[in-house]
Length: 354
Image (cartoon, rainbow, N blue to C red; front, side, top):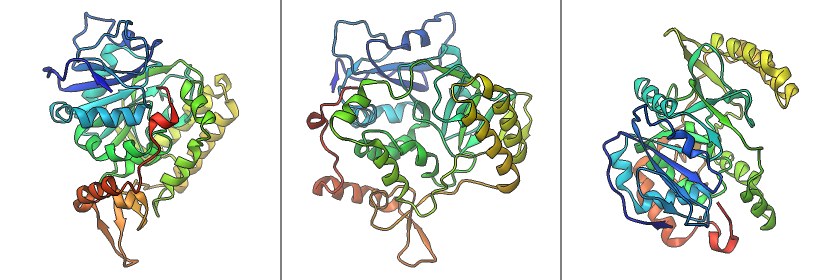
């Protein structure tokens, strides 16, 4: 990792730290200089050609690891960023967004006191999870799942997640659990439908996936490993309430029915129409069978890596009680770093591009 100048503090409250290469769309995000921004842009670059122009408000950083371990290294080298900015957004470089929309995302996160938020995906995007598709009429929908593609995270919570990013460099599986590692996670994470983004590149097409195959790495094992660390992992992606654009708050039933209708309407034009319609059906079923659902903090099974890192709650030795492991997190992490118990293979040995 190379930081060309060192951190220079700005006056804005929010930071967009973008992982970018030669074909990045980040220039569109800052293309409108007539609209004031409430966020600074810093680029974490995996492009090998340093002669390319990389525009940002803070010094450009060059790091040739993967997204998540590079982010962990960046904040380890620049911890003052976490103190200076209230929220930090971590977008990929294959997203089309507008400057004003990104500012609006931060404003909504503050207004609704969210710990995590993400823009909703437009219907013409390449989509992995239909739950994040934009639903007309909503400002936001509360969800137990947010994708890793462009998540906005409160800085204090991001600090808690960094040890996980450092050890799980593929990024797979972390977005299945990160909304539920916080204390009292209900109504703290949301898909913001008022703010759209377009994902423009086909799924699983980047050079990182070729490197996984070359080095015999199966990211799906990361998913199984991370979700298997908890005894109350919910397995399904739920929306359970939201706010409409007219300012009315709605509950889980109405949110799911509206979401189901929206998916059913767009299903014929989607890349996977059957899958989209099937998700719509499940939302209708859950509207009746999951009434009152609220995400709860995940409980890490004793002896698992997440328990050792102190993420979520740690299951007590006594079967009928649960204890908060946050107080023991720092000494546990120090011990793990010294012993190397959960250190992943080095990026140099894997030769992974960004």
